[in-house]
Image (cartoon, rainbow, N blue to C red; front, side, top):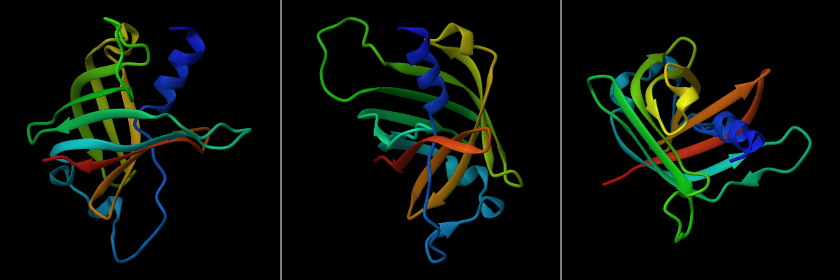
Length: 153
């Protein structure tokens, strides 16, 4: 995987934008760790280049949070592959901490298929809307991507 694509995946993983709807919106200050606990299925994953149209990343994935503060995430491109190693596959696990005041969840990476992520804290902005978890990554005050998750059965 080239450096540009690797940086793009790092910058885009777990990001999102939500349109405000007061009837179905949970404000970050009202959220608790309990809102995160469970298994979530990826609904959509978009990147937002500074100089272009949104890009549908066409990924499938799961993210899990438990009540003890552990988390794990896996994403891969939609579709089947014959390869032993899937290009674009992202997986990591560790712990998480919610900062309601800042509206962020921090994933502290204990293990990953990207070895440089081990020991890193990945900070994500979050919202809950219409029963979905929306995570976003911001760089220089700008949302660079979005991931929308729904609870899986």
